[in-house]
Length: 505
Image (tube, rainbow, N blue to C red; front, top):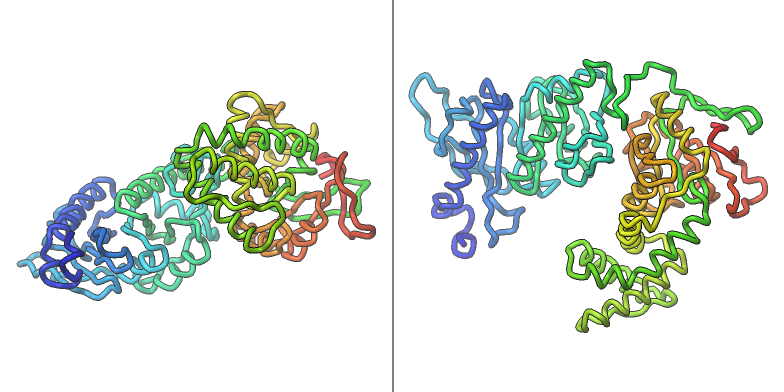
């Protein structure tokens, strides 16, 4: 590799095959993007880092298409070469009239922010019509949202049932003036791989040029779908894409409870003791996971998914041993598969017995339960008032989310396989402990930012746990406590409104 022999800023490296191949790749991609309408009128741009296994990605040089050039006619010699910090290492030679003198793109500072803040391998800037029009559907919206569309799966970190959220920043007269607002959006939306610019276009990044290109294609498809749904009067941000609702989205507590709650835009629901009997979790799900740990690990030991689960468990167990957690046992580093599995089983069963609310355990449980649901050995259980309430709220245009200590996978399995059918059509998203623990008020701040409300009080959180209710209230959410059969006692004078059925909301 060149990186082992030459400094990436040396003239010899700048003339290397790796650099020339990347220049040619950008030429080819720009022609494709021109035909897609993403870079017409000399607008738009693309940059790619020169991949070299011997050079850490943050130190790899960047190839960038120039500004003001007919993108479909570019050749490799037209490209700029930038250092990892963004300084120009190599510029294209001028061409005779009527060509304009070469100019480094004004997008440069924005590209560098994506490289710097997200360790990207490529960044695409598109002026595609879809990316422009979708920001005009709601001129006051600060985000684009869509859910339950197959192409969402092409966006890093998202699945079909997830809600895709893309921040929208306001356009400026000059491209470089967008740098600060783009950086703020990247920081505020840690999951996003794109930022829309109103009336302008979109910036998209990925770990590699293939990732960036794939996601760009998916984003443009989703924008086009959203525009067409809007033209039909349908809402792309709701699970069933029903008619756009222009109703007053108020949520109230019916007569017989302690007051009313107005102007809610979202409802966030706990599962255990709120939508689902505690007994289903404690008497069905937990025992199933406990009894099938060894079988699951033995059957899937060499899969990528289980290797990741085991690594998470090792890290958690090391932390537990360091903190003196009861029943934590070391996992042998150099031992047979059977010995490792036996040690893991002992630790996992102890974690289940202690009802630990930790990601390592919840992720493994979700994978075990998935097998149970797929084999029809498990069926999700919800209280009888839940399906009707979810359908009613959905018909009113109220978005409903789930927040549980169980993994997002486990949540989707429960609501996707209930005795009442698949209830995921009524749910806009799922949150688990990756946003934070449920008794930590900061977790609810994260949820508030994720669901896109203007203020926390526009969210109604329903839970059976006093500590969770207190944390949510501290973050500014409105809270109801669910009183269900089998739930634990509450402190006297707890100060929260209560319900015994979702029909009361």
